[in-house]
Amino acid sequence: MATTHSGTAELSNVNLVDRAFRIRRNALRMGAVQGQGYIAQALGVADVLAVAYFHALRYRPDDPEWEERDRFCLSIGHYAIALYSVLIEAGVIPENELETYGTDDSRLPMSGMASYTPGMEITGGSLGHGLGISVGMALGLKRKGSKSLVYNLLSDGELDEGSTWEAVQSAPHWQLDNLIAIVDVNNQQADGPSRSVLNFEPLHAKWDAFGWHVERVNGNDLDALAAAFDRARGLKEAKPRVIICDTRMAKGVPFLETREMTHFLRVDAHEWDLALEALDAGRVR
Image (cartoon, rainbow, N blue to C red):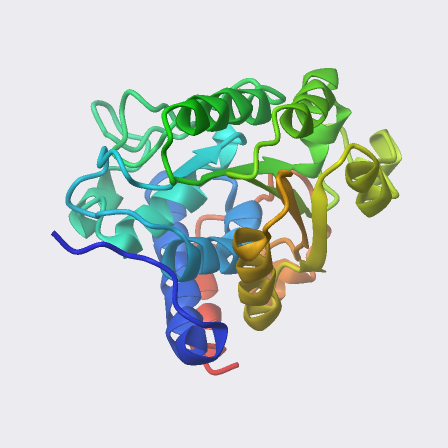
């Protein structure tokens, strides 16, 4: 069975551009099935997922429960459409299941659940719990002597949750150098712009003060992301790592990027095909 593992940023960049494009396309196709979905977030985080799955993670597409795999924990349950998109691109989920998104008996429910979907490590419906689960997972793997890494994708809105900061404090205490947190900073949450709801800056200084290795990058720059993942994985210090990713909602579809942004972006029925056409037109970047 083939193992997917990391390469170098220079050698994989062209491949990553193609991967990110197809991840976005998968997400738009799924959104069209139901006429809805958290599509702005999925488009925005596609570059992060491309680097995670096709540059950094070790896994076996045909054996999602392979014991030596790296774990990717999606704390943000409503980002499930984004994770399904990359799992389809990675070959963990067959592409023909894309058409079942959000339907009865589908393995791709609109909010992610670990018991339904291959490759989904945790059920992240209630925001603020994912990082704590990942801390426990990383601690368990470390005590077993495993070399696997735990990645946890969380949102800037989750930084409002006290449980998130309890986990941030716990990870350095246990010297969890096998834990890499990824924060998607898109400045949107259910109650409005994240910084207006509860300002979380200065993020770099806060995570650093808690004892984490901190990287902050443009989350839509594949080269910068690959380099940040490489530094996080290669760090020799016994501390957890965090990559803070500033992303643009709806990235790749210009007419959606410039729309007044909300947490749940409205896409009219006729616009799904237009969005696919716009994405295809801008493929060369």
